[in-house]
Image 1 (cartoon, one colour):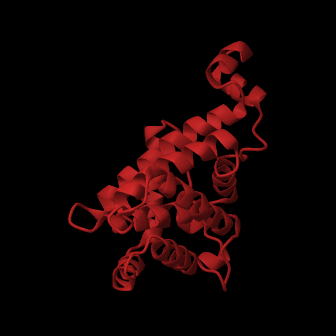
Image 2 (cartoon, rainbow, N blue to C red):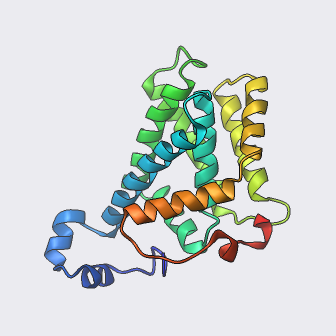
Length: 213
């Protein structure tokens, strides 16, 4: 979070952790192993917290919408966090975890809309939607492409791909538009980092990009 994924070296990690190189290699093999460990924690908890936010009474597609909105907002917190997410969607081991686990989630959420789809079909669909997600995360918000527009565009495309009826899509988009997604995402980030026992000090309002308003 302080200096980004690429600038952080294994030597720094080993020094801060107070362990030997051999110990580090036995656990993680390389720096991308640390990234994969972080990804497993982040994505598992993001869906769990999206379920808490959406509640038990709303349709499952709301969980998908909330998780998507949270993830997209988190990448606007600061550039180092954006880099971490982009690396996660790029590196083989971390991205495979994202594709595989998200495919399981979307099969549960969208299975009723695609009754003939197999687990392999949902995995293939996730490859496509993940590519769109990464493209939006890589592009910083500006006056033309605000955070709200990013979320709306991604959800419209993905929900249509999963054959969600237009009326349900409209209701889902309205629900997300009515949420203070910045506040929700900042709260999620605080909880995640507290759980990781990491100390940090930043506020979404302090790190907001011009186009995020």
